Amino acid sequence: MDWGMKNRLSRIINPGTGRTVMLAVDHGYFLGPTSGLERPQESIVPLLPYADCLMLNRGMLRSAIPAEKAGLPIVLRASGGSSVLKELSNEEITLSMEDAIRLNASGLALSIFVGAEYEKQTLDSLSRLVNEGEKYGIPILAVTAVGKEMGRDVRYLSLASRIAAELGAHVIKTYYCEDFEKLISSCPVPVVIAGGKKLPEPEALELAYNAVQRGAVGVDMGRNIFQSEHPLAMIQAVRAVVHEKATPEQAFDLYNSLKN
Ligand code: R5P
Image (cartoon, rainbow, N blue to C red; front, side, top):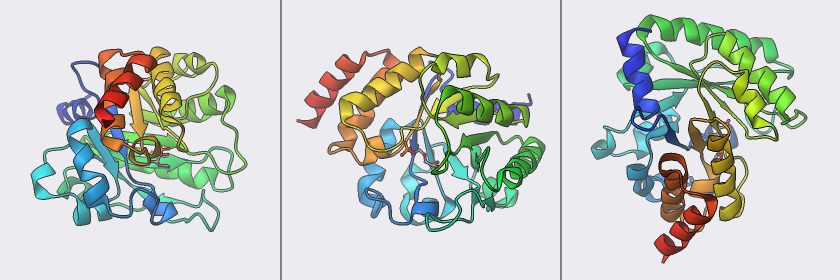
């Protein structure tokens, strides 16, 4: 692996702990004005000191993230083209490598939809993005997206994660599931988990805890942080789980003390 690729990966996954808290705020690319992301200057910017890395679209980066936060590593979403109103898997590459470099992305994210109508198109896009990323030393994070009809069990998520790794993805973002350690044992690259729909805070902290206990390098979490009643307290509690080995109970105590 060349130096540029290593350097960028070390900005996504903290080399000190081997873990990462990525804050995912890219939902608007297919969901529009997602609850909690309507005014990112107010809801997201205060959370940035507690994120190792921010995952977002270039539109939000340019319009909402102030210059004084320019040192924060970013993973830019590079796929899109569908909306929640249509077939979700019909995505293409939406970002040029030139713009990714101009914006100094530490990584690029793309969704694959294994088993969906446009499976081949999304796997082809992943392969092409990996080819481009390898040219410039930019790691690719593959998101194993799940459509409405698709499973979330270990068999399906292991299949999708392994395919993404075999096609050259450097990091996989997937969902936590029962027997998650089986997915980790068959995936040769680091795995982070999405948080999914908003859960009560103790459950979201337990999800993050179980994922890192069973081999994930961290979280790429969105709604369970920015839709929390106390997002600043929640992101710090998630950090405690991921980086400081806090139990879900200790992290929830921290959440309660910080929210006050
Ligand atoms: C979905 O494709 C997006 O990449 C989201 O950023 C991702 O699902 C993580 O967000 P959440 O924790 O809200 O599921």
